[in-house]
Every structure is written in structure tokens, then in C-alpha cells.
Image (cartoon, rainbow, N blue to C red; front, side, top):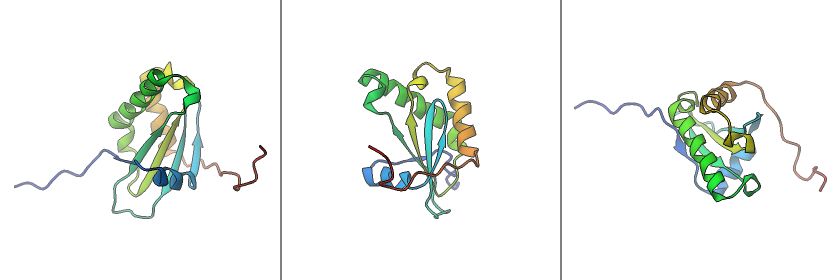
Length: 128
């Protein structure tokens, strides 16, 4: 009997508290999406990923298409670049809908491997 292969794909973030926890991490901005990254401090566990597409980016059909394109890009290329013990939330932007698929995968890998960090303003400091 052979031992199971190491999992090369990322797990999923499913609950709202998991998504909100990742918001406390770092941001990596780009033209197609915003990537939020949180180091859970658990290097023994695999990476997890969640997808967010807000209602301001189109109707349900367009939002689902954006989400499917992101999921496939993670499955094909970006899942291998994700670090163990990290959570990733990908927040889609409208330009993702018409971008070439190769560009989505390439940009996603670049953002994941990027060391560029953007900090969030402290809570309550935003003008409303």
C-alpha cells in the first residue's frame, strides 16, 4: 500500500468568521482582484482560500462567472504557490470578467508570491 500524495490544492474558507479573520492580515492589491493574506502560524496545515465577489460587480450570472474563473485559476496554477498555514481571500474586481484567463493565473501567482504588503487603516479611522 502506498502512502497518500501530499495535497497540492488549497482547502476552502467557508464561514464568515474565517473570512473576517483574514481581513486582519495583509492586502496585496491588483487591477483584477484584491488578495488578502493571513499567516495562521500553523505550518503543518495546508493553505485555505476563499472567494468574494460583491453585488456591485454585476448580476448573479456575472458574479458566478468571475468566481468560477478565480477557482479554476487557483486550481490550475496558484494553488501550488500558496504557502502552508496561510489563508487567502480573493476579492474580485469587475475587470476580471473580461481579462484573458492566462493573465488571471499569472497575476494571481505573482500576488501570492509577492512580498509587497499593504496595511489597512485602523478600524474606525475611515471617513463615512
